[in-house]
Image (cartoon, rainbow, N blue to C red; front, side, top):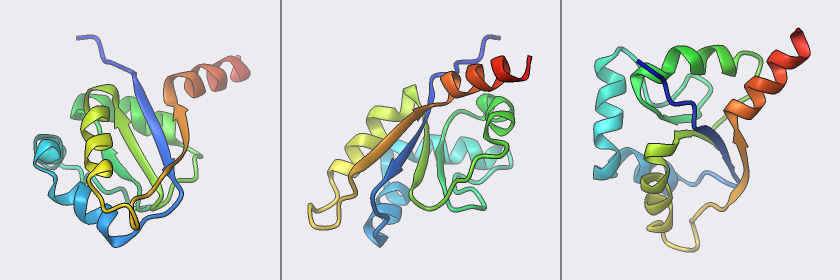
Length: 118
């Protein structure tokens, strides 16, 4: 089965409590959170980054994330959950709403790293 690799790391300028709460309670992201938990994974990584991908993307993702410094301001999101995450962020009251600071396409990063090692 082909695995989609349209996965991004979004870095936000801040991470207020409302940000985590919104991502945690958003009904449109519930199926993703449940699927990750059913597969034995948390949607919040040990470093604090939030993860919204399909379980079948995790092996590729773990390999790609090696040596990357991630933290609370990062959200890893596959293309299929991207619109939902953006909608959730837009619903956060404007004073607390984080702004997207940087987006990294993980496939491009993986290709660049693979090219450098060969």
